[in-house]
Length: 357
Ligand SMILES: Cc1cc2nc3c(=O)[nH]c(=O)nc-3n(C[C@H](O)[C@H](O)[C@H](O)COP(=O)(O)OP(=O)(O)OC[C@H]3O[C@@H](n4cnc5c(N)ncnc54)[C@H](O)[C@@H]3O)c2cc1C
Image (tube, rainbow, N blue to C red):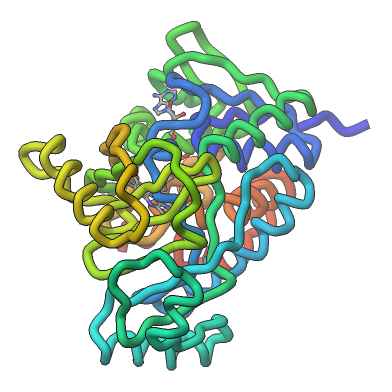
């Protein structure tokens, strides 16, 4: 009988949860360690748009569309995940940029449709102002991020994963490889350690001399109180991206990555909410409930870091923006690589070693 591999996953946001779930399902003995509430840090503050939209080179587009397909596979296994392919309606680009995006991504197989004012009104009847032209992608969607993360962690636990609330203070090295972690509750040993700790990742990696070059830009999202249904899908208008959540809240940022909170986040939130209300008919009774400011774990070139830390056996890293889009593919690919040594070609551009060059 082969002994199950013992893997520590640091982080219980969407990325740690997905990796832990896939590893556990594949037979590993998994321990998740997180120092915050279940659901992560960036994850609950996310806009959570699942997409392979404009502005990305083809290899990243391919990874993102694969991740979108993997969301459907994951939701079949875990139907309690609130996943909705509600579609995205976008006109936040210049006419020329929209044309380039539509032509290029259509050629890559992305289901983009050009829609006129009448088409926009049909998709989103409550918009107060209509653009002359927009692009609609029916295959884009949303996974409510905290509920999805909790569903993954709960099922991983049912399948035998341990979830520990503790702070990882250092990676433990023995004979040039990572053999566990030191935590606020003592040492824990493992065959492999995965760092999926979002903005907390660089400090953990640094304890083994591994440099993770990430930035942490802030993003402000406003949340209304739950309200009658006004939006059918994602609306990506100029300076205002919004959607209605599964519990009926309308959430928005000046961009899906959130608004710059500026010096006075309260005032920025009020302004943004006023713009949101002005964009929606039937929103008279819509009230601002709260706003969040999340810090996005963003590698300095904007692309994910996923894979083994070259030169440090026993260590795997998964840190990224667009973690909601990418989570199911990251969980699957990381599991294959950690347990079977199979690196997916889609991950080739996203290794940590690219920063050494
Ligand atoms: C405003 C905003 C909008 C966004 N919009 C989108 C979007 O539309 N689409 C999209 O795909 N992505 C979006 N993102 C990005 C996405 O939310 C993140 O990429 C994703 O949530 C990262 O998940 P994570 O699990 O890596 O990190 P987190 O959710 O931050 O989780 C990190 C975990 O690590 C733990 N941790 C950290 N340090 C330690 C330590 N020393 N010891 C123990 N545990 C530790 C924390 O407790 C937490 O559990 C957005 C993000 C923000 C902030």
